[in-house]
Amino acid sequence: MRNNNTLKITIMALAIALNFIGGLIAISLKLPIYFDSIGTVLVGFLFGVVPAILTGVVSYIVNYITFDPCALYFIPAQIIIALCSGIFYRRGLFNGKKSILGIILMAIPVSFVSACIAAYVFGGVTSAGSAIIVGILGNNGISMVLGVFLTQIVTDLLDKILIVYLVLAAIKVIPRDIKNKITAV
Image (cartoon, rainbow, N blue to C red; front, side):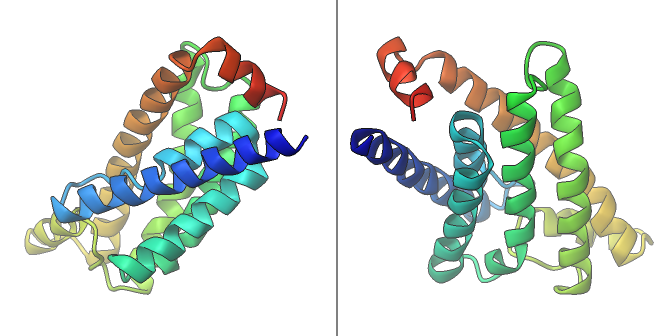
């Protein structure tokens, strides 16, 4: 039992590092995607909702302290990602053709919550590269709130497509003996 907990905690720590590195790269390069929930989705797929929530929350606290002054406010989005990844993976919504449905069902509530936070807490200007798109839309006559919502929907959908397929590919290459240990946790 102790070894299983050690394995789970080790993978969660690595997942927090993945979230940190992905988010840092996305913000540093001003990418219009976020890449800061790769680890949350991985832990959600492997261990379920509660470990994924812990991974996402700790990741955003670390990101807030180290490089992203906006991260703390977006913890509700990480919780939704954790809930969706844990529940939808267990229900098979990321298998085969159903994966698109699972990604859309994850992206919609994450987009809504993130857009509300970006628009009403930050006035549409966050540390994410997607804020550039919001600015461009605003300069072309689209209201800030509408611009944030449109941008968030597109960028979150693209982000979740990349993350889910990346995590699914990573899970496929995990050696069988390690997979057996993980499923026993």
